[in-house]
Image (cartoon, rainbow, N blue to C red; front, top):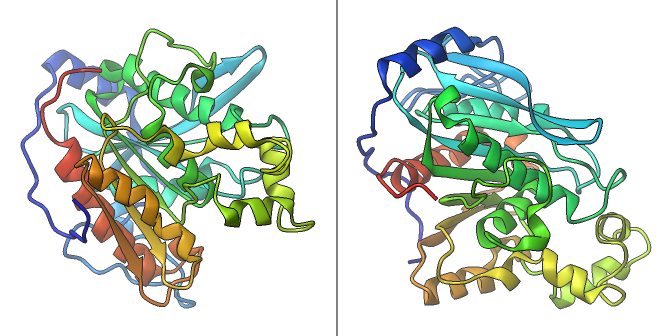
Length: 332
């Protein structure tokens, strides 16, 4: 069901036991980082128009930083977890995945997105993943799946509803979000990051500025280009012409089937039209999976850095996650 849907009704959520609530209260510390505005309030932009977070919203969140969620020998990966204060029910979780061409960035780059969504009634986790200079694909998606499994395995500890976990990411993180949505159960992509007895399936996804068809003519041309193709070849071990099966495995569209969760795409008006995911959304519509696209007027590819664009993104993403995650489902 494609289209644009910006406002949806919040649904009831289940409660944790009093014991779990008390444990969670002792586990989390007061947030001292950024979060977005509550619904209906305007975030004051910085003097240069960059995204800023109101102080009262910063104070409304708990945070626990540098939580190790995966181990590969001596190598560990960490996430930062956020949750609204004063809410001790089981809350849906959202994994937040930073961009950077699969080659740079860290969990701090998606911190504001994580905190913005936490302020709308979610447990959010901004994650690190192995970058392509350290490990080529599929390491990155394996790390994202390890993060989902970790949250599900530790749902009681962090006050999470394990049946309702979503993901959001931008650029390279948008690609990983889309792939996370469509590749549940693909053995080659699961990895050995721990908690293997738990599912890495997610129940809703918001890919932003994302590439979803790695077998397209555009991808073939860019991956072979001397300069622009460098990040693709480092990530996937070569160009599409050289590594077609690797590109197929990394392509979210390739894995699409009728069991996949709702996906809502967000992109800037000035970004490449490939980020509209037209073919991807058409296939989802054929499977009757809820999907849609929001194009942010006048916005470039990196739209989360400017307050007005950031706010519009949250005004779309938060209701989407409320609609699709704050419901009762069997635990995967």
